[in-house]
Image 1 (tube, rainbow, N blue to C red):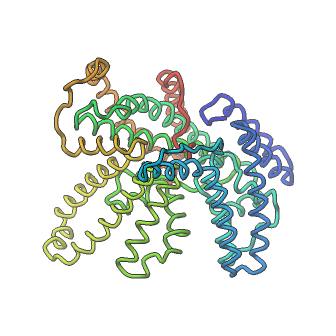
Image 2 (image 1 turned 180 degrees about the vertical axis):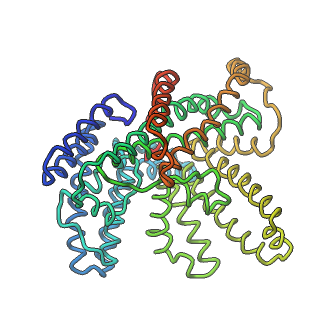
Image 3 (image 1 turned 120 degrees about the horizontal axis):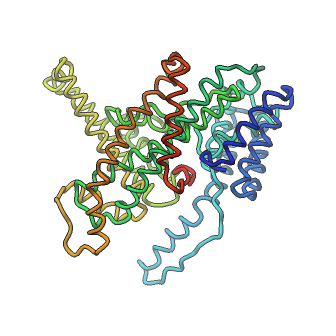
Length: 486
């Protein structure tokens, strides 16, 4: 049941209506059943994993609470969660990687494979379970009710692709005696519509263009490949932030507030700033439960850089069981280290420091930083999008060398693609400009409540125009959300 499906647009109002009509004692059990139904609508066998894993973590949390400072109990709980994640998500990846070593010793690759279905959202709810055990270890009280704990992980607006919730805040909201308010719908419904527009109107149309270029990067010139990289940068932003908006809007209809996951990441002034703005719930999770336990920045320069590198490399592997995600994570780890070292170095150069601190120099430096950071992020997205490492490096090489054309020996379909480029370029530029039309209202909605302060007729017209545009311009087939695979 995708957020973009007609089935969900029927399911959500029914569940919301039941939630507010039922007595308080029945609301959470009903919501848990609805969440499990939502999850089982993809493949019902998924329940055979999430239910036992939920029961284990609930019981293990109670066991840990009896001796909450016991590192062995905490470690065992974390290991069991990670082993389950490794079996379902990484078994084939590890088998392929080991099998690839056989030719180095003169043996034939055995091509091992396991017939394992990857459960949707396993990375997200596993991280929430690990967070829960960590917080009990740090002294938080465990959740007594199994229904309450199960709903923390299974809540359908965030179950498949986050945001990653923190249990003290979310459980407190579920335990509150909320009354139905019109403000929940005033905020939630526009957020759902804006999220759907991001996905159907922008991300799905951009995906057609991105597919054309990134499937055959060897056929295009440097400037054209940069255009494909820009397009994917906005595709993944619209796709994932669109999912988050629909999830946040759906949760608001029940009176629940879930974390904001994006804060205009493409205006980041450096890589550290980018990770404060992109997938915020993941970046803060990696900071709190991986970077800091590794030692954080307490061990000096080299240990700090090591911890940054390991955190981002493992964060890349978390995204997918493929070496391209590891390379993407390593790229961001190195970028964070370069930023950290450069910031420390420039602070020792008086001329650079005074230039940055001046009014004009500060503006120049700021916009140059925005430009360089965005383009570095786009280079990283190439490794994220293209699973073939050699093809990804080829694309990045051509982007950086910027030779104008690679048309020698191009197949016939390449010539057709190049003829289409003049038509596609303005379409993509329009899509990119649409960022302002969709992101600014969301920013106001999230932070300044500007959207709610506008007259109701303005809100209605804006949402109506988005609905008409989605119906008119969405592709024939909507692709699954990109982060569903994680």
